[in-house]
Image 1 (cartoon, rainbow, N blue to C red):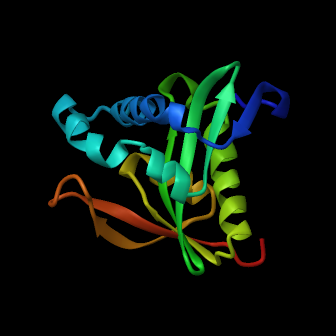
Image 2: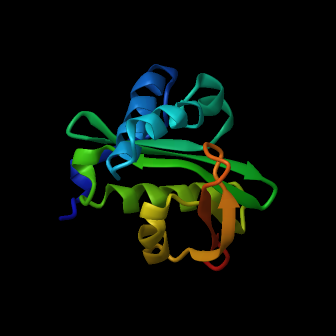
Image 3: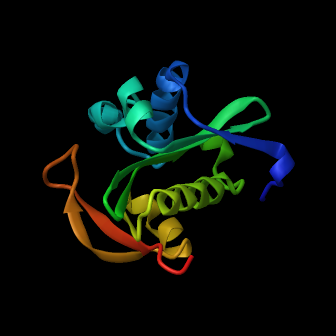
Length: 159
């Protein structure tokens, strides 16, 4: 099921969103069946802070007055990195992930980036491939040293 433009609003994150965005990211990660212990270990890398809001391009998607998802990018010269992109579990499958990913692409292009790097959760690999990203290798998880994540790249040239 997809939604139309009138059903949602995309806006920048504000400091008051931090706690809600953090909990949304944790619940979205837990949606994929990870253990409670693993989700607890993810808290430090999924915590949204005011400095992140200030320094990283971002967007929050609201649907029917509630936060349904968000993304954060870091930008260094011509490379963007998708730091966070999460959808609240009951909104998965409604097209919000694609909307946020396209917003992240537009933001990266506005910041002069030519490529976007993505350290993907294995459960999101198919999504990013559908969005045009290509797996270029593997990278170590920030949470667990022995966990490897798909490393993906999306060319932003000619978009």
